[in-house]
Image 1 (cartoon, rainbow, N blue to C red):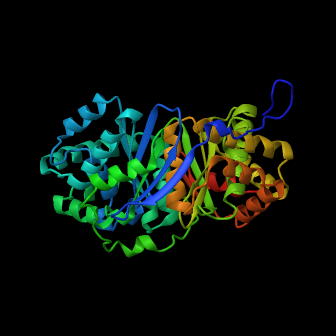
Image 2: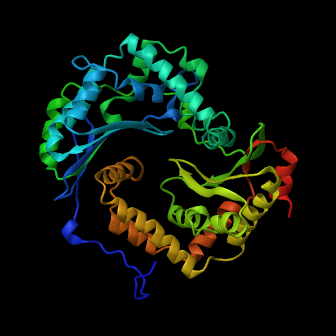
Image 3: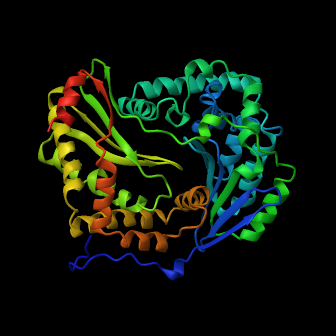
Length: 440
């Protein structure tokens, strides 16, 4: 990335926009982490629960996601409609997400409504009723989500890929769970899961905006008085490290395109080589100038969508590649993917390509820093996975320290085993996948 005079763009930290990070532990054991951003009018608040789909037993498959939905469905003093109206009344945006390793409830609103945000989220944690009528209504809603995923080939094939990569380990199971299990949930099952994961020492609250940390802590201590709970036994399988399984799976389906995902084992979230892998992924398929995009789409016109991605977890990671193309072009697409992987193993990428990758990644981080929601996410990830705060200048500095040799070593380390799990969906046969990707 260059300026109009040809000089390289330098990302500098503006001290006038300094964001102050503070961390404390509330009286009940909940961790509170905030960043003060003077002059910003928006405020972002997140409640992060260290419980996702990987922490479910087979009889709880989909419970983390279902419970996420139920937390919007009423408390002792608010109905589901009251919750929606109260948020709209202050001009806020309230949503939630469930991942394989955590669940998050996040609220973005004007900074003047901070007390409301704290009171609402505290009410949900302490007083959600899980009304049986709402459970049945929401069960129907989530069943519609199953249909939506199945009608999206790109989304569905990635769910299948995770299951094939991790076998019977809970990390490989769909976040939505299983329809049969979802239909069997009772209110007591929901309460049991809530007690297993929604206790104070398993929760992190993060906030970003023009705020006072001490006032926030005082307000939370007042609103969350009496909310504590204790650690309950979880499924033992969720605690063991997953094992990566190679293989090829073909889902025969009458479609206009063939959807293909490939994955190899990658680094865990806090691995020392994670940034080298992150930059390698950016070079391989992370943007429009990436090797895969240029080769497969721009030079040959074989696909509209092609990209690579990283999915790091606490104890393992996946590096994935996705492409959608016509049946007759599958072998050529796979051959080009194989060629790019081989190039990464054979020699280092150029200094220019590394600079492009670094600037692309840093630009996304710096542009995201204008969003309080993005900053709230960032400090939560630091707390959940890195056990220390990583601010933007430090992340930029760490990225700058990665060399072409580091990226090369990461490529050789991850690709040398030639251990891949491939899932293809469409009018294709397994032998065509094998011929396209593994024949040299």
